[in-house]
Image 1 (cartoon, helix red, strand yellow):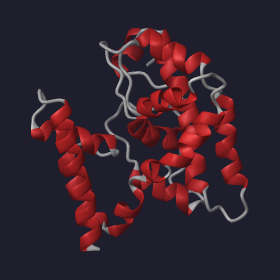
Image 2 (cartoon, one colour):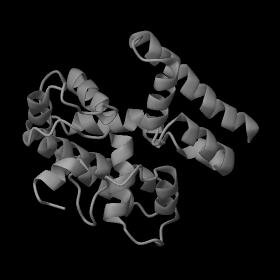
Image 3 (tube, helix red, strand yellow):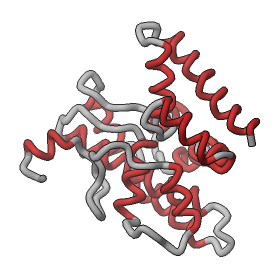
Length: 224
């Protein structure tokens, strides 16, 4: 168990070090916090605390998106009906870890997510995982359906020129609770995913909603 805990911490430190090299304007602590955030934690301290209390189960499951990276990329490729598939798969994969802000190319992201990928087909791949009798890829099923909704959320967000959107791993925690709000479900996998992808803050999704927007924008629009 100790070795697995140390592997997760080592992974975060190594990734943060690489980030610092590519973004030297960020401090080492900022890179640690950003890496932890990309894994679904509030910050590096939160990662340390959860890793300390939850042990090997957290280590084994927290990087599910990375674990299924090759499968997800193959699904993305099949949902893209354009030339230069490899380049586009890369773009869509990068979007999963990208936090949209005012400096992002909002028009490009909107066009990419609106016209380049079949989001419904992507979700159908996810639903098919749920139909598998042995439920071997149930967790992957939730991830694929959520990715389909995430790309639509990015499309809507950029269409409104909001200029602020969370990355997928943060979105996934909100999505799980919006789609499956019950405190207890019949799926152990779903309950485990909720533990591994907690809500970060109060800017979540309302029940049944899939398009995310920051609270300040929702207040401006009179939606909350």
